[in-house]
Image (cartoon, rainbow, N blue to C red; front, side):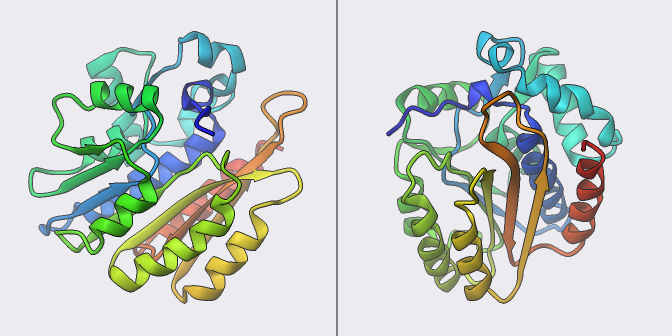
Length: 259
């Protein structure tokens, strides 16, 4: 059940939503002179090449960040991370969320990453060379539950599964409930695909029911190709940082222009 590799999808319209909101939230957290913990349950390989055969085969990046980089002014945290990645690693380099986090965090902050897929884990270790990170070849939910509440207590967790394991739809509300009990000050973020048939619906409803302070942001976009089931993507933030709802609304307006 570990077949998913994000290289085929890096930089697509779902990544644009996820990484724009993540970069904004991390930038917000690091404005204060207080340390931050960042945890990621499904880290992937951390760095992608948009000229790679996988990316060119699907063409998703060409319809994503390569077509819509102008959505983000130079001062936007996402645009800054993209520019920094290209300056360091070449014009075709695209940062995954672990690299976006590493470039945003400071020496006082802590970075914890889990990735179970053998090839993705090896790629992650290579991509994160030179960055201070706790990288684990471990089930990400188990890592999160074992570390929470982390030190420092202030921070953000990103859960970004591929959902190739269908049980994740049922598992995530239970894991988030446990994490919220253990780490009531933490920002818990979840990305999910919006697929034809709406399998995400019960999961989202359960999360809304169990968390009082929650931001749900969904965007729709044309399928990447004929027969592709993904019609959009969603982000959920439990304990969302102040101002994130405004950034989400700005993104919503941009995605509506795609139709």
